[in-house]
Amino acid sequence: MDTLISWFQEHGGSVDASSLGFAEIDGQGRAAVAKRDLPEGHNLFSIPRSLTLSTRNSPLPKLLGDALWKTHELGKGWVGLILCMMWEEAQGPASKWSGYLATLPTDFNTPMFWSEEDIQELKGTAVVDKIGKEDAEKDYHGRLIPCLNARPDLFLPELLSTCYSLEQYHTHGSRILSRSFHVEKSDDEDSDEDAEAGCSDAMDTDEAPQLVAPSGPGSAENDSAAGAAGEDSDDEDDEDVGDVAMVPMADMLNARYGSENAKLFYERYDLNMVTTKPIKAGEQIWNTYGDPPNADLLRRYGHVDVVSLPGGGEGNPADIVEVRADLVVDCISSGAGDLSERIDWWLDQGGDDTFALDRDLELPPDCISFIRLLQLTSGEWDKAQTKGKLPKGKMEPAIASVAVEVLTRRLAQYPTSIEDDEVLLSPERTGTLSLNRKHAIIVRLGEKRILRGMLDNMRKLAQGDGKKYNKRKADDKGGRSGKKARQ
Image (tube, rainbow, N blue to C red; front, side):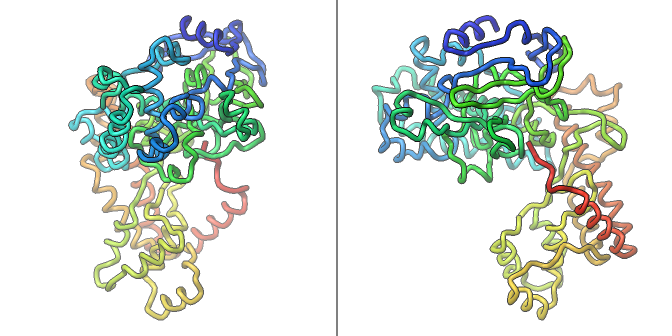
């Protein structure tokens, strides 16, 4: 840490060494710790925008030129930033970021690096389909390698098997995925003069699990770059990849569900890590990943959160279960005729192809709407098309009956039962589990408990009527200001 701090300060960063220290904590690695009692609003450290590492700040894109950058689609996804990090590391001490890159991890606990045997422990979860290793390697061979070969003056042939290897590609991609921030371009960067000066971007971290603008002026909120190293991302096509940046010092803070007590804020030229509540001496200083479910935590960062749950027990309160729309179709299609036209219309109207179930244990309105759409009579279907409106998400016994079938089949996709997993995580057995297997069991157990709880609710509704259910949903909606911010 002394080396990193020295490099940081030499390049214009400032650290309040009387307030912030670093320590090794069991199960969490290196962590930031308060050295004294800290008030809310205390500035822990500041980072010059120019010290963030992004495709805007690295000189490589300009050295390559726009034509080559566009030819190999380096501005699409995270390939360009990975290449910049590879190139900067290959420069050794000549790189502005050499002191920082030397401190970044080389080993990861994310599923990207798991064995096939360990991956099988995640069967039934949505994690397996989102690892993206094959897509990452396709980008490496199809986009990055041709670029390397086109400029041997920039990418020395003798370094191709080391600094630019597939292994290094995965390593840098995982660094981006687990440690990057979303940094918006500053106003100054809109001018050519400021761009030449190397000004950086302006950060984002707090609101949704995906990359979103901060909730208030000047706040910079932390989120991993979904899409790095092949990571699947719905937002990738819409986002300016130049906004994704590595932020020295800020990426040293750990995160845990509901524990955030510091946040990154930005000003015109600097990014500041500021306490958001009082912190006692000796307490850990936590940033936020936005409180995502354990499936996302494991996939992006290689760890899971296990805290006390509101209803008792332990787990991650933000856990969700994904249910694919095609599973819903399979449960309805028998005897329903060809539903493809309705499915296409659903998607054209902006309907999702996956539904997220959470610990509310209530069927999401969009899932109810989809089931109702598939169950419409021919006359009702024609009327819906004429109006151009999807069915309302109103619960009734017929909907609940379909949900019972859907949830039963979804639960059967896991190779083990809830009881099996609880035994494996018991004090007598958990010590014999590898870290990967333990994490996989925690992820799938959290999901299965949601499915079982929702299945119990749907069975009760299928035997009665949905009036009380719909009233409760309406009351809940009226008592909320909107969707919970996902940070």
